[in-house]
Image (cartoon, rainbow, N blue to C red):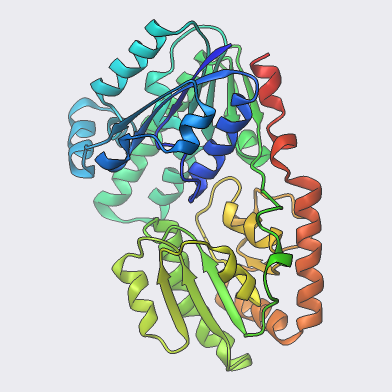
Length: 385
């Protein structure tokens, strides 16, 4: 059938967590349906669709999102709406959606990320992929913040929670990235199902056999380095964990790998033995160099793609419990939440390379067994049958 696919960020290139999921969902749906994509892009030059997108879509409409954060906040406060929603409220986008629906016999709609809830039509075969319970993330932020910022986070949690419940009541099905997120979401209202459709990994691309094995005592953290939880995690790793780690393993080094590092992350490179790469063309060589991969996120929802990628590359991973929570890793991850415990776990793996290698191989085997994209996305076939 003709299927409308709405996304708050164009699925290509799949170089960050949300785009990795939306790209693989788009490809999966395009195997069986004529998919019409309407999505935002961050730059005006990106409105010309990439060949990869045109190859899998029947039509592709990309619109430049111009609205600043300050304007979105002002609109939210003036209208009583969630900032997450006003940031992506755009009459041009609504008009583009209406034009696609008028030009094609759309039989179903898939909306990716909660910001697209405002464009999801009523009717049968409407699937809302919330990915994570974002309202819970803001609720958690409100408990750790202070003053006006804490109040703003609490407001966002309340208003966004209402949006999530409303769209779940209207949609045929509401998707989450893990069973933990699905269990967190309150049931009730409407007849739509709430189900988990988990992320996967392309283990043929993330294959350690392509690269030389690691030889340095290097700890690698990957991620988008203007994303607040990644920023907080990187600072915590370098400033709180590394001094303890060096008491046990003096030669240990850290590489922070990811695009758009904010000043707080760039400043970490001033520490001896710490590298901040910024954007890299390919994250795999850095994972291949890693003796250990670190995922030190204290605020994390759903499945962390960065962890799956490291596991697929047969890297031993030390993660916080929040970063590991959504992953069915069967004991192939090491977890710790305090600086001393995290440093101890890193040091043990840096010092015992045979044990680290065995743990990495077990992690890759678990990914191959549990996180194959086509199998994990199979529930979509029934939703759009």
